[in-house]
Amino acid sequence: MVHLLQISCGILSLFLCCVINAFSPSSQVQSSVNDRPNIILILADDQGYSDLSCYGHPILETPHIDQLAAEGIKFTNCYAAAPNCSPARAGLLTGRVPSRTGIYDWVPSGGPMHLPVTEITIATLLQKAGYATCQVGKWHLSKWVNSSKNPKMQRPLPDDHGFDHWFGVDNNAKPNHHNPINYFRNGVPLGKLEGYACHLVVEEGIKWIDSLKKNKPFFLYVPFNEPHTPLGSPPELKKYYQSKTKDVKKAEYYANVANIDLAVGKLMRALDDRGLRDNTLVIYSSDNGPARGDNGVYKGVTLRGRKSSLYEGGIREPGIVRWPKVIAKGQTITNPVHAVDVLPTLCEVVGILPPQDRILDGCSWLPLLKNQKFQRGKPLFWYFYKSSPCAVLRSGDWVMTADPKKENKFRSKSHMFDKDDLHYIKNTELGQFALYNIEKDIAQKNDVSSENPKLFEKLKNQIIKMHTSVVSEGPDWPSLLSDKEMLIRK
Image (cartoon, rainbow, N blue to C red; front, side, top):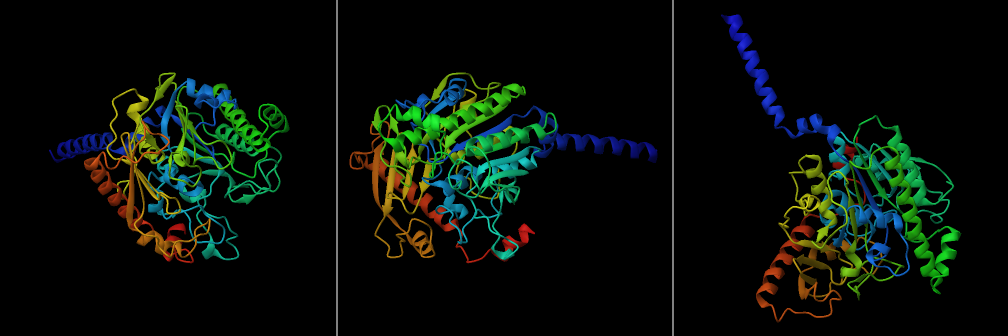
């Protein structure tokens, strides 16, 4: 009798374990991991909204990226997380307004600012879900230093943020994109490399894919150095575009973007050759508006602002998604989407929970990919203390901009983050507001606050609340890494 009872209890325990495991996110990861899509996230550097032929550029020819758009979705209201390099990348990888993470501006050498190891990235989540993970290209979320000379000055590297394999640079390719001398592979400096940066990173990514076990799902993050200066472009492309425009600088910029297009084509052909096309989700966008190219144009109207501005020209970007197994071809979607949405979207795609212990500012737009009803649960928000406006909120077709109530003497005039900036960031009070209907007035020329008083007050309260939440969470940078951070790294 006792023996039979033990057997019955054992069967019951096994049954309960099966039921519990069936509904556990981690078990779902293990049981269906081979069915999950591969994910490739491609990010251009300083490419404007309309600097692709599929977005209406009159001179640029980008057939491979155009093909991506034709085979999937082209978003016309796609936004970066910030108007310059480092914050844009922090927001993209964490799903959080960048200032929450402490990335207030671009990361210079010598300063303490970096993406803390306490932040959770897309790569970390996918790595834990059974994905192989790789970053090839520009990191720019910490400055790489020689830790052997001073271990306390070591900043987190891509492998501290979930990447199994990494190849690239901490900031810009030197001396330019051609034959760069400052690339690393998994922490080892490589010296001078032969070729153009965009092709070098794509070739590294393809080799890494080939090194993986069969059916191992992968996440490949491809943040190009191009078309950020200093430019280095193939002579034949420069010659071709010089025949199209008298502006020599623009011709080289166009050649640089065209070279990205060739590299994207190479990566897409590699997927085809390996039978990976159908179940690989590819996302293409840019980190912020143009520094050197043309101002973005939307519906024939020039966007206001450029890189480092929170007007549309500094944050509205191309946004292309292809996933043949799921997405119908040839779609154009006007719903606003934001770089901070990528993390929750990929979590839903893979079937894992996004981080539950922190504020996420994005939401999943997987329903859009499946041609289903989508309603954004929260407005889009930006904060960049060096821009004027310094805060922006978009809700539907309405955009509210804000500036400090009064100028703060602590505001740094430097192009980069410095020690006095934190006082300014933490003590700024918003007080100058403007309201635009972005679909009717994409150039943001007409403040319609007085015609919409109720809406104005509603959005004003929302933008103040968001701004307060974001700046209160952002860390106060010490001169060195904290003991807590060092403990986590060990």
